[in-house]
Image 1 (cartoon, rainbow, N blue to C red):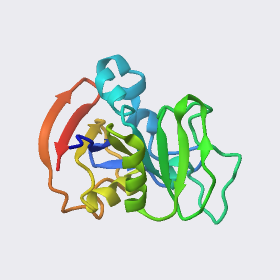
Image 2: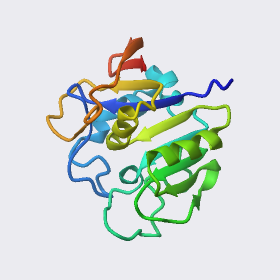
Image 3: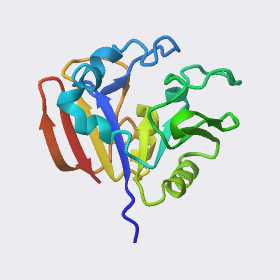
Image 4: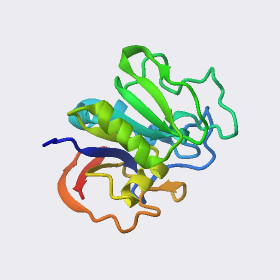
Amino acid sequence: MTTQKVTADMTITLDGFASGRGQSRERPFGDLDHKRLHHWMFEHREDNLAEAEAIVEAGAFIMGRKMFSAEEGSEWDLDWTGWWGPEPPYHAPTFVLTHLPRASIEMEGGTTFHFVTDGIEAAMEMAREAAGERNVSIAGGPGTLNQYLAAGLVDELRLHVSPFVAGAGERIFTGAEDFDLKPLSSRATPHVTHLVYGR
């Protein structure tokens, strides 16, 4: 019997937004101030070390195309390999949901981006197999996470709530309002509140 779980981490504002409007390569979170959103993970990492490290502990990851590249269109820029430089933080197979086929990209440190055109269930099946006994993580963005929440495919949801209001953008739970939450734990620091829910 496998103990593999599907987890998801998402940093959100007090009003539930995880990304802004107008994403671009220069602004991967659009008009949402990502430094303010994620300051707990970088400037205050020592106070939140366990939560930050847990984000990349999975054996495989799934993300949407907009998390890999903010640009839309009918063609890939084949020179673009993501925002993370030559060694992304995942260090595991990472499956990118997209409508555009693309050859896999092997990066330094163990991350290989695989591009999946057959939908969320196909990506999940591939990620489960690639992860082995380890967990699968839905890396984001919010639109991709919402699809998996609506499909009932997330076992553990970890929300990291930054204490400010965005007012607009892409919100978590849009289209997934029936997701049944069971509180598992919470921890507050001066810069973020960590909330963990089970299905």
